[in-house]
Image 1: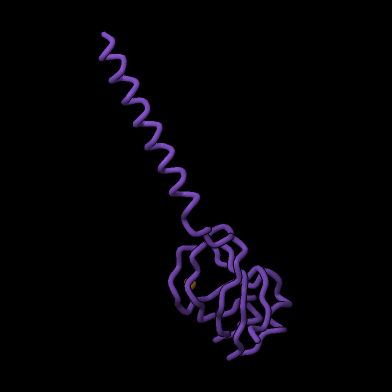
Image 2: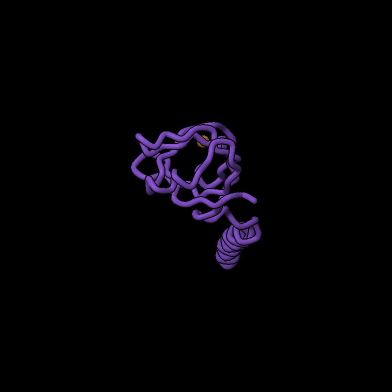
Amino acid sequence: MKIRALAAAGIVLAGLVLVADRSSAQTAAPPAQPAGAMVDAEVRRIDKDQGKVTLRHAPIPQLDMPAMTMVFRAAEPAMLDRMQVGQKIRFQPERIDGQYVVRKFEPAN
Ligand SMILES: [Cu+2]
């Protein structure tokens, strides 16, 4: 009986160690990309009528997206007035209702 109780305690302890291990591994991992992180991109095409811009962007970890060229909606149409085709920018991408949006941007240099 005593041995059984000890064995049970051992199992509980082992379980606790496993749990502790897992949580410490999580905190030790490099911090995830914050949602508002800026991403490098180059402006490929501007469509002011549609309020959209085509960007060749670097990988976007927070959206689980590799580097690619794709269309984004501008959060505010006036943003497109401040962009030029061929310009290097840093922008904050966001996914809103299934649409990819440029939340804000700044010239890269
Ligand atoms: Cu993309």
